Length: 187
Image 1: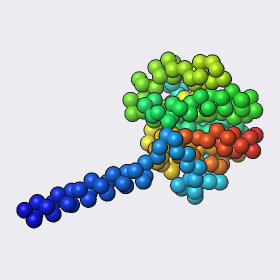
Image 2: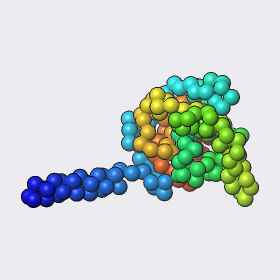
Image 3: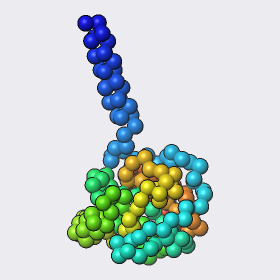
Image 4: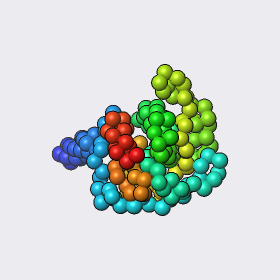
């Protein structure tokens, strides 16, 4: 009987400990974390990556040198990612003509078979109008994410200056006002 009580106590402690550890480390869609967990990359050159777009063309980050770029790692199944897409569309519309672009890096394991229909079909309300994702969408992978220091969750965004340096990392949904100020300071 004592052995059973000890075993049950240990199991209960493990379950409770796991619950609280998960709760303490979970990145919520409503949570905005502007502190880069790997601050060593701030001010350093953006990594060299090349990914396929939805048409199968190779697109490299280097092609956007001279522009301010927000690399946004997301997934079609990610609720916080979907919630921030209207803000990304609005940023692309407002700042695109001034030398800014959002690069959406879709991290769905199924790849193009899931991402392409999502991008073609989904519409997001921006300024009262249904709008498609109006920025380039690339098919991501773990190797690309690792070059940015890895991801703690989705969405994760990295703001890159015109001269190709990483200036801000955001884990979780972007804070539109904060990111807008950072973008404007670079344009």
